[in-house]
Length: 369
Image (tube, rainbow, N blue to C red; front, side, top):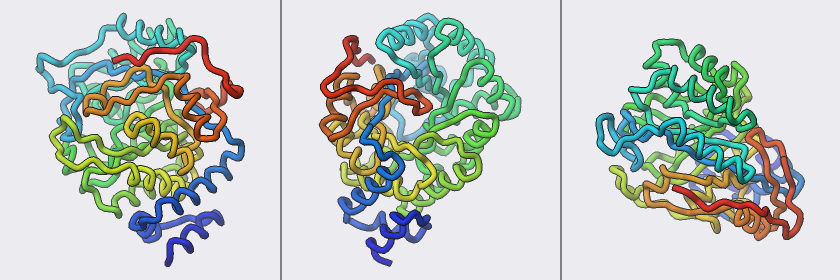
């Protein structure tokens, strides 16, 4: 089957399978893939609006017992460089986010074996008491699995307690490649792809939404990349809880996994194929934080309808040597330069404000680390 035939099927709304996905990824016709992905995106989002959320990453601890070869951020238990932020530091960071109109906190850290479930429950309750309108899009599946392990409770019970305390939704971090061959090579202690998926689908079943992610460039096969997309798609068919999908490329600097950094073209191909194959996930986020604002802008014509978070603070990707910074007004300018209308959204993808031509915010932020 030719690329044109496969893309025609996708444009008619037909589902693509493993073989067709592999053919797409083996193709070097990136512009053609991007055109088709953009057509599919415009069918789902006919208005020329690109959304973004004003949010902040808070890395509450860097202590982690998973020892992932691709991570430059973590410190092992007992390290003198390990930390756990105290509550007041976290509250201050959230206040700074609220002060510039932020609505989302992405709180993630390592899998710290010294933090019990009560730590997270109490912290979430205190955050919600002080900031009742902030959306806590926090704690990746691997952190939740560590909390489950430490607590001795079931996965569903842990999620129910976290939800009751104030956890609103779960980010897709830790998916990397959802295939166990690659997972064993890059992160032997992190669990199987099914472990990651079980957290997400259990969260969906108790009424929580999540996002899904994918990272390419670990040396995984093309077949594994396509399997990743198919597994996300099947899970979405079953529980319908993924709000968005985000793909980016592995950033190898300062890590123990020595690989060549993938070129921007490979990222754009991944974005396009994700949009073409994930027919049941409405939103695709650009990953400007790893690819840079110019490639982020280009991704808005390769299937992305969302520019992601303004991310006032970011420590994990920057630890691997990638330090792109974009504030609110720069986001507005980049989206407009792509020929789109910028709009601020919340984590649920509800539009809060559409920015008129040339309009900027009066109160912006400086990128913090």
